[in-house]
Image 1 (cartoon, rainbow, N blue to C red):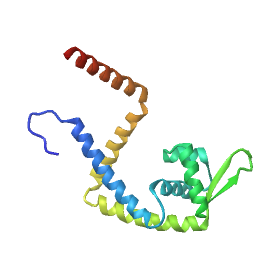
Image 2: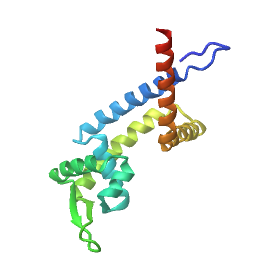
Image 3: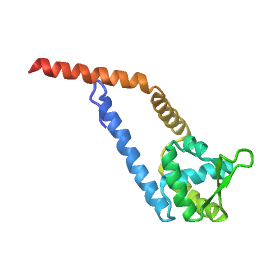
Image 4: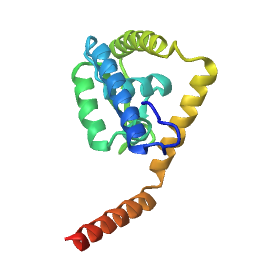
Length: 170
């Protein structure tokens, strides 16, 4: 994205560049994981289980940013593939915890190796300072998502103003 001197930065164009780059990387990760029979959501669930042992469904949902319904469907598939098991909590029988099986650990380990190789290759052109800067900037952008009502009001006001201008121009 080239910027002409003296012109304001086109934020829509910047956003398109970020979005397009993310989509390309995401698709490559999907392709890499598909050889092991996993998608990105499955990999993220297995990673969460690997890092924390047995987890309640609600924790998987919050850790992976997936809905409870999506978690249930994915866990059903992972359970069918014998990568995870459901266990009732000893403390509260209403709570179902998900645990990884030895087969799940093996598949996850292979997937993590492949993912680590890919990420190392993709990020090798950035030095440590640039990596920290990129991570910090992406975190800053994602924190904006934590202000949904304010953002929704601003967008609604902008749309309303644009609609009013369009109607007045007719």
